[in-house]
Length: 51
Image (cartoon, rainbow, N blue to C red; front, side, top):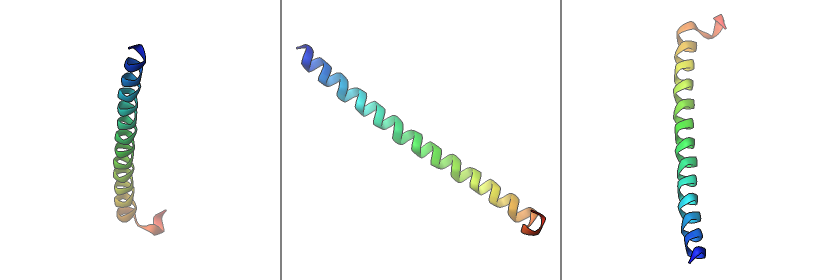
């Protein structure tokens, strides 16, 4: 009985944990893309010679 409960709990935790990781990765990728876009715009506006 307790073994079943632990198994279910572990599966639920694993599901939440892996879901959290993938969500964090997507969020991180989105932020990095946004930062890259902003930097790219700044560099394009300022010009390479001024750097």
